[in-house]
Image (cartoon, one colour):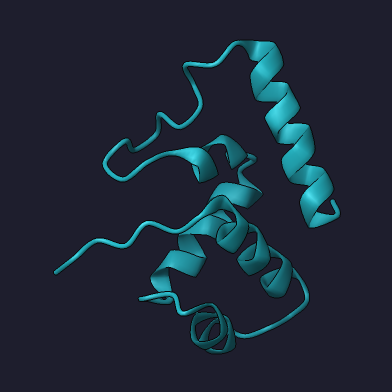
Length: 86
């Protein structure tokens, strides 16, 4: 089984669609996501305010942008929140 990496933009669109009330099935089919459990994972990260995890590469679980300075992390969080309209 080949692992699929999704861009931050796809993850943000997924969050927007879920907040708009779309079903996981519709989101998965529209965005060509391999499994609907990925939608649950991204929503869990969003609800727990772990948006930095959207930037992590495959295999770097929990790390994400943690190596950036606090100011850079806050800038990315602000940009992320602006892009999803929160």
